[in-house]
Structures are given as C-alpha cells and as structure tokens.
Image (cartoon, rainbow, N blue to C red; front, side, top):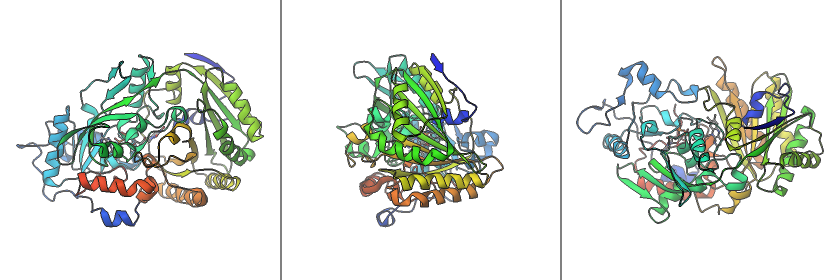
Length: 491
Ligand SMILES: Cc1cc2nc3c(=O)[nH]c(=O)nc-3n(C[C@H](O)[C@H](O)[C@H](O)COP(=O)(O)OP(=O)(O)OC[C@H]3O[C@@H](n4cnc5c(N)ncnc54)[C@H](O)[C@@H]3O)c2cc1C
C-alpha cells in the first residue's frame, strides 16, 4: 500500500494525523418562507391502503424503532421521528413521500445519517431512510461518470471507483453518505485540484414533495440541478440516484508536520498567505487542537503528488519561518490514501459532537492570533476542541458564485470549530465556546459551510447572495415546506 517514514505518533494524537479525518435569514427568509409543516395531529394508518411502505417502523416497534432513528451524532439519540420507512426503489420513495404529503407530515430524507444537527432524524417527521435502495453502483467508462444511490458511503464509492482507476473529490469520513455530502458541497483533499463534490453532479433522480418523480440534468429541470449543487440536503426533493463525473485515481504523498505551540499563529497566518502560491495538485490544511491543559497542538497535513511531498513540506516550513518539531510521511496508493484519511478503518463509530464554521477569504496575523487565543482559552478550561482549516481555493474558484447554490467561490478556507462531547460531557460549554470562536473571527468571516450546519444559524451565512434564488426554487417545489432541510435541526 506504500511506504512510511519518520512516524512518531507520540507528540500529535492519532486523531490529529488521521483527521483531517475529522478525521439564516435574512429578512428574505422571514418573508418568503412559510413555517415548516408539523406532524399531523392524529396517528396515520401506516400500513393501510396507500401506506408509506412495507417496512415502516414506529415507536410501537420499540428497540427496532430506536435503532432505526439513530444517526451518527449521538447528541440526537432522543429525537422522535413519527416513523422511519426504508424504501427499496424510487417508486417506493415516491409512495412514502406522497403518503406524507397527503397528511402534511414533515419529511426527513436520510442518506448516511451524518447531519451535524440531526436533520435526518427530525422530531415528528417521516424519515425516508435511503439505505435500502437496491440499485448497485454503476460506472460508465464511455462517459467516465458514476451513478449511485445517495446512501452509498464515501468509502464504498471511492473503493468501487478505484477498481476502474477512477475517483471523485469526496470528504474523508468513510461513513458519510454521498447524498448529504454532495447536496451541501463536499470538501476534501482533492478539492483544490478537482473542485467540490457537488461540482461533479451532472444528473439526478428526484422525488418532489408532491410525490412526482423527475429526472434532473443540464437539459431538464436546470433550476433543480442548480439547487442540488450545494443548496443543502432536503432543499427541493428527495434524491434517489445521482450521477457524478470522475477523475483519474492517483496515489499521494501524505506528510504531517507538527509545530511548537508558541508558533501556531505564525503557522496559520503563514499558511494563509503561502497557500495561493502552491500548485493546486497539492492540498495543505491546518489543525489546531486543545491539549486540555492550557496549550495547543498544531499540525499541518500535506497531500501532494507522489514524489513532491517532502519538497512541499520544506517550502511550507520556509514560508512560515518555523521549523517543524515533528514530521511523519507516507507514500500511499489511492486505496492507501483513502484508508489513512478515513482513520485506518472503513467504519467510524457513532459519537456525540457539536461544531460550527466560518468561511474566510484570507487570514491575517490578527485573525490567526484570535484563532489561537480561542483554542487556548478552551484548553485552559480543560475542554476538548479544535479548529480545522480546510482550503477551498483552486478549482472551487473555477465556478461562478451564482452558477450553483454553493456560494463560496472566491474564498480561501473553511474554518471549522469542532468539539467531541463525551457521553457525560456538556454541550452547553462546547456551544458557548463555538459562539466565542465565531465572535473572535467575525471581522474575517464571510459565511459558513452548510454541511457543518449549526442550530439557529442564519441561512444567509450558508448561501450568501444565492439565498433568494434558493428560497424561490424551494418555494416553487415545496410551497408548504414539507421537507426538512439540512439547516432544520433535529431537536
Ligand atoms: C465525522 C464526520 C466527518 C465529516 N467530514 C466531512 C468532510 O471531510 N468534508 C465535507 O465536506 N463534509 C464532511 N462532513 C459533513 C457531511 O458532509 C455532512 O454532515 C453531510 O450532510 C452528511 O451527509 P449524510 O448523507 O451522511 O447525512 P444525512 O444526515 O443523511 O443527510 C444530511 C442532510 O441531507 C438531507 N438528505 C440526505 N439525503 C438526502 C437525499 N437523498 N435527498 C435529499 N436530501 C437528503 C438530510 O435530510 C439532511 O438534511 C463530515 C461529517 C461528519 C459527521
């Protein structure tokens, strides 16, 4: 699978290396949107004529129902959807959606179940869990495009494509569904060179809130394709198949650099001014985490073409003017890179977390100092917390900001604030820290990434100048807001 050099995992946590594995609004919203539909007062007859499907689970099904409602983030284990249906075909999805639509029941689509805010397990909703859709992954060598169900996991999809020497620009968590990832954007180590996952979406099958099934492509329902490319899950319909164009799968050099705590702000600010000078075939991200004892750990991950990793690392250290105190490097083939970034396993255990993000066009020395100060203050309180700074320059900029619903096309990075919360830990303190973090970078912030949604954030933050068009498209297809969107919190 490749060779590794200089591995010293003692100083930076395994999570730091692999993580990279993490590894609303506006007046327009208030005036044009209607209140989301709420659950019908009386219990629907799930199994009667015209019912939601053969495999409907409700609270009366006990443990099977709790298992069916559980999503990746254990914070939402207490949400209580009205029912969970697991259709096998697009027609069965349409039947379930029509059933909910007739009863004005809210609908929560679910692909991989990794919504940050529990949107795929919303209270009172009919969850349409797409993980039983039976269509196999299909790669068409003549068009170099792949067609999948949205519940296909990132690991499953990328592994399948590698067998044909192909790949997609996906995120790193192995169990995320390509549905939610694509509909909200999709960033990962191929983003600088190959763009967002949503930029690869060329066709989709969509069940509209009315129950009607439509084929979406650049020639048909272009307004829907525009919204599906970054408008967030559940914006306009339930997607049951998506076709994405692929690129050649290649191996990479992965290099992790650790830097002294005291140099962290210099590393961040230096990274921000250096990155735009680096060829987009290389991806470089920064991760700063609390050591829970008043200090911070600073790591930089480089994913570069095979043979280029060491040189890119040396250029980075020279540019920021700080010598790394830790280096680990590996040359891996495409499967090896996938597995390493996935954290060494195709599965990732459910756990509790809360997060938020800021999108920035640049990071000045002052902003870098502010980022470090906020992580340091979390650390001083003994709390876990990290900031993950992922580039969104390069190929992301080759698409006009208004050409798809994803608006951040002139930006440098997504700055994600992330807190793992232990089963007995406090979400209040984590949420309060994230609010402090937003405040610390407010002068530099130009929005947020919808796939890192947080409860209560203004839609304007996610969609910027594209919000009005997104809301108009949504209103045209879902006038009574039956669909729970990726910004509608689960509880
Ligand atoms: C551990 C972890 C790591 C992550 N790493 C990355 C990363 O590297 N890069 C990145 O960009 N993002 C990353 N994410 C964020 C991820 O992209 C979003 O959470 C994404 O929305 C998850 O998609 P899903 O299908 O798994 O989730 P779900 O919870 O199933 O869906 C998310 C939203 O989309 C809606 N939806 C789902 N399927 C459909 C459908 N078929 N039709 C219509 N609406 C639908 C849901 O109703 C919900 O609102 C990560 C998330 C986690 C938890």
